[in-house]
Amino acid sequence: MTERLRSDRGSASVWAALSVVVLCGVFAAVLGFGQAVYVRHRAGAVADLAALAAADRALEGPGRACAAARRVARAQDARVVRCAVRGEIADLDAGVRWGAYTARVRSRAGPTDHPAARPAAHSATPAVARRAISVAARPVEGPSGEVRPLGGQA
Image 1 (cartoon, rainbow, N blue to C red):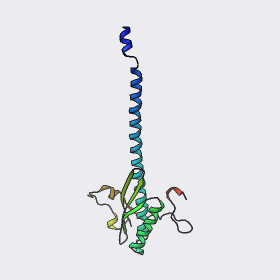
Image 2: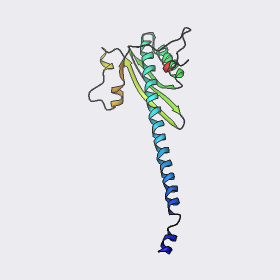
Image 3: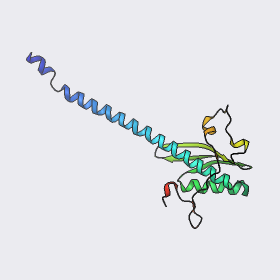
């Protein structure tokens, strides 16, 4: 019996070390997933805000509308990848990069009574349908016309 106890000596240390390694791996995976979700949500917020800015300036022409969208995206440390303005409807893609993660989100904004602003019931891209929003808000501008970041940070 004494011989059997001697053969198991140190096995608890091995199991404890393996448990710590596995828990660290799980923790790293959860952190990575959380960062990816954060980047995706941030890209969605930037895309919505930039689309609202472009739709607000749509009647001034596509050049000015897309310039307003780029200014808003730049203030949020993002960029407008694609911008198209047709009539009063602004349709754009915004990209956000944070660490190893990059997200690109499409957003569309325009008047709620315009047929192109309403999502199609049979849309092949439900993310675009959920992103159809109205021009109900303007980007936050400071006293000298600069666009301030989300959350009121200057």
